[in-house]
Length: 312
Ligand SMILES: NC(=O)c1ccc[n+]([C@@H]2O[C@H](COP(=O)([O-])OP(=O)(O)OC[C@H]3O[C@@H](n4cnc5c(N)ncnc54)[C@H](O)[C@@H]3O)[C@@H](O)[C@H]2O)c1
Image (cartoon, rainbow, N blue to C red; front, top):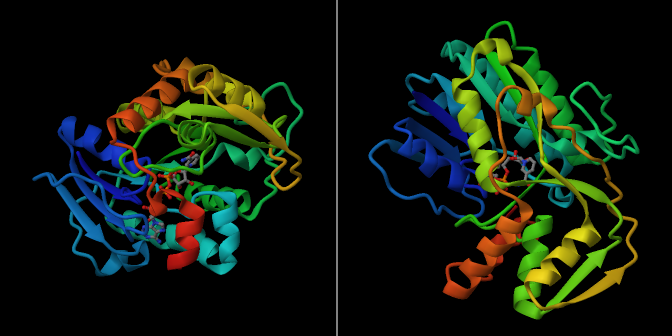
């Protein structure tokens, strides 16, 4: 299959693309490479350093499917430059969808976010729960979903609302919950928890990638919106879990800045046959191993917010 990936040099794309190449796909990846490029060279990979707003100027031929990952990818980063956030995600997505329609692309898979549900006291939020996005990032994701859905007559649309992703990637993110708590325990023997009672869903990066691989092949009758997160845990319970595996002290601070709290119900994806294969525990052990083998180092570009502040 000819697959166009946007934002494929990011944390998730860097793990996903080698898996897709192994599956035999022909990949074109477009990424500004804000956080560098850790993708291997491969005869079936065309890796273009560009903003997706240039899509019409690039010489891209046939596309069967697009996996759209490019975005400013969390709340504090989205707040850095509000116009850039709307432009990068919503406006660029509109242009991308027009381009895909012109190219007669069959299918798009979109990386939305489970955080579009905002704060919810419900036992679990399913795909039919009304959205209550509270941050700019959540609102941009919600609007971008709607832009993409408006093309459903022309293109098969699969929208994924992932939990917070965890686990090792060569383009590591040290700003997502499990990763940052584990890394801090390893490096400083200390885990800082802000608040702690917020419940957030989690998904291992390998499961995240396998879900995109599944949606490349499922029948079009399954198109629609899917939650993807299999472990709903409070931040404090994740910290305690890290501490069990890596000797460290937990320090708790008051925090009212990030009250997002919700539990994802991912039965819809489980009912079409997806079985999660890995857990938070696997992610912690894998990060620990990569740290001790020296494959995981503390690089400035792995701290996405600080890095983006410097370069944008
Ligand atoms: N990592 C998570 O926990 C998580 C959870 C839910 C949803 N998501 C979503 O998944 C997607 C990928 O996340 P990630 O963790 O890999 O993020 P990331 O920040 O590591 O990767 C995003 C990539 O997009 C690129 N990019 C941004 N704007 C671009 C533009 N206009 N043109 C071309 N490239 C551009 C960046 O250079 C970066 O390489 C994002 O849309 C994110 O919102 C991630």
